[in-house]
Figure 1 (cartoon, one colour):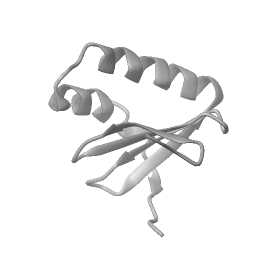
Figure 2: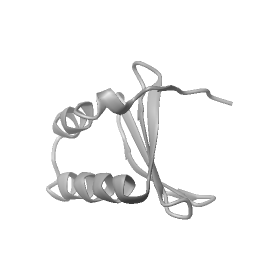
Figure 3: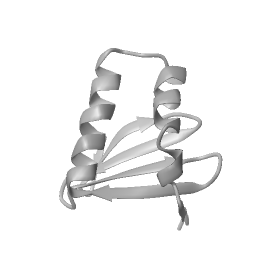
Length: 82
């Protein structure tokens, strides 16, 4: 799904991952806590490579969510919906 330069990479009941190619960034949001982070540059590239590797194996939603939960210490920004 692409809309105005963003690509939804992953969307579950718990997590949301969006790639912003123009900004060279990736956003990760924990829907339960309402916290997220925005990675850019090398950090975004490394995260993007990691999540693509995990998703490529057609894992269960639970296993992807478990992988993403490892990034919870980075989720420090309160998400504001417009």
